[in-house]
Image: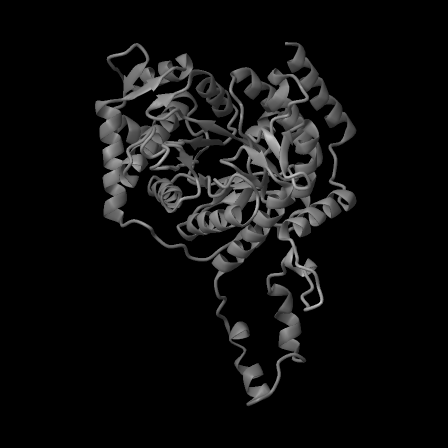
Length: 481
């Protein structure tokens, strides 16, 4: 599968904001960091920032970051990285020329299409979604999608990653790490898979989402985990989740300022602690329901915020990761599909590189196997759209047009045979055979059948037995610690 990364290569992207508008947001964030500052609950991060030149604020954990210090530290962030697979055929260069899609994590329930109700998620749901994602051609990165309620709470993250490592060869993104101990265990597991800690520093087999707390707070445990990731050069998706009107200003530009300030603050902490460690601009922004004050992820404003965060990541030359899916719809189906299509298309249009969120609804809390299959179709179509039109002597086909002439057919031409495989081939729609005598088709049932077919037929490449035994040993040791 030497062409795995090439299927995600796209052409020119477009801008949402002018250069002047992006500069104003950037300067406003620098002003906030220098004047108001950020609260840093991690002692390791706080010490690194102070040693680098940060100033103490009014509170014991508050730091002010002078603009010059911020600019100096973020200049150390690598502009391009490669998110590695277990094997090199699944390596993904994050270099501004690709559009990748990931599954989402943090689900606490699974949609049962037959009973139209929710059930508690279990570890086997991680296995099944990893197997499906390993097979799906437009899933670039797998992220354990649910909390496993059938294992001890302390072991949720570590066990989920161990199952993922054994059931897909693609790059793994860990989302729910909340302690440095969890981070160290995952580093040890990933090192066992790739052949040692130095190899892990070179080949970024896993990456990690680390959330800030809006507005302007770096959580203690999560940021301590970020310091562990940084020490081992595990790429960090810095994820502000500022919700406009709730944890950020209600205006879109103001919410982007809070997001940008938090992202730069954690990036500075990472670079002060481990210069050159890879980070990604990984915002997942949302708007507020003006009637209830609740979080909304599928609104036009949320889509603009996600696209705006992509633009700001590009402004500071960070690799980009964004929450482009994760519908607000409470259940799988048409609303979730419309929201995810619009949001993912907006993020891809402005240059999003890693777009997160396949397969979940209800603000990323509810896994749906059916929605995963539909979202994958959405991702494939969007990638094809942004590949654009290839214009060359071969594709202009002038000689073929002259040969066929007026009123002819291209069906039997060699040129058609040579290029027909380039056309996008859907995985779900092909299951539907139209006809007046056919019963009404339920797309969710079609998606369910496709997911079950994949699980029945696809056998992913498992970890080598000695490696699997070492990963299992690390998991068991973590559980006892």
